[in-house]
Amino acid sequence: MELSRDELNAALEKVSVMFPSAAAPEDQIGSMDSQFRKNAPKSGRARVDSAARPPEFARNIRAPASRSPVNYHEFSVHGVHEPVLRARLESKAIDVATLNRVQIEFQTHDKLTQQELSQLSVLAEQAHQLHKDHDIAGAEKLYEQILESDPVDFDCLNNLGKLLYAKGQTDRARDLFDRALVVRPEREKTMYHLARVLYDLKSYERSKLLFEQVVQGYKGEIIGDKCDQHTYHNTIAMLGLIQQQVYKDYSKAESLYAVVLSAEPDHVLALDHRSALLARRGQGKEAAALHRRVCALDAHHTKKPCPYLDSLFPSDSDALHPVRPMQRRIEEWSPRFAEGAAPKHWSNHPLRSLKKKVGRS
Image (tube, rainbow, N blue to C red; front, side):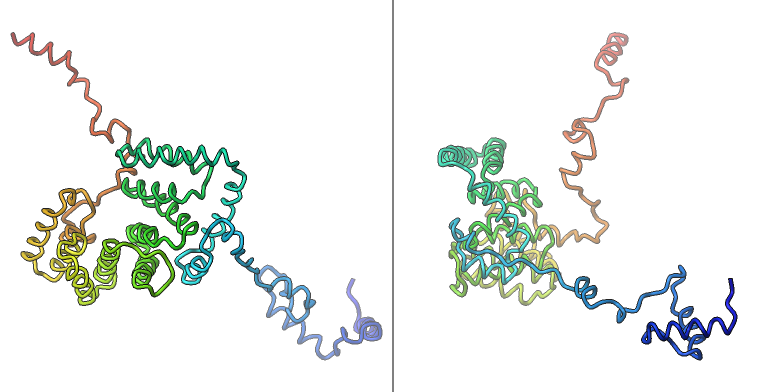
């Protein structure tokens, strides 16, 4: 039912008496209606002005999620070096997600009895011995069995990480080294292993950060267990490789290799990285000669990733087909194909061949 003009004015007067602040002058009704249609969304529903919302509503919506502070006491009672843990967390060498995960895993550790811990210790010694004897499958099985019961066993985390990294399982190795670094944040050699894995995973920024902290710890500039000299030289060589491959700063890479080779002239990693640098600079003969020296120093060098060969066949080159990881090949193809044996055609059956030979005779 439509209202007449007089009825509409009477209704507005009643509204102004009951709700003075809600009433609007008659001459503004038309402009308000046009403004409403202008600002209304296509669905036909008007947008509510934020100024009209209660302050409590805005406060509940806009309040940022508070991050619970790290309870360092829970880590210190488990023997974790608290000052180093704080420093690693502040420098982002350790991420909060891994810290929270290890904190939960300590609860599983706390439920173990002394007898269970003794049994796990015996299993750990057996796993270490199998690892030394190159029984990789047996060692891996025992390490995983121990970590299922005690997920914060540092030696098992660290050793299984090295074992899996050697097998090319970089993602699993990264997870293990990340957790091991939380349990023993002062162990700079563990930080070195994690940095190597991160480099292979192309997480260059964090890899560089960890390598730099290993160097700082060796020089006594930060708190931590000083690594051995060979690991320190490996770290310098890896920092040189990052400057060379990632930042293309060849002069800085050359200076880093010079630091290592002046103290250890037969350092394989620095020599190998420098051969790749020479190849990228167009010094092919010198690079090849240096790489032959590397192969003479390390008999197993050809079985490892080689920056020199990568420099000869860069990723954007058409000289080689892209190589797929072995794990992916096994997942995509049948086990028989992965092992190198294709199913034989019926025409190549041994009995058929024998029949042909008998027929010829």
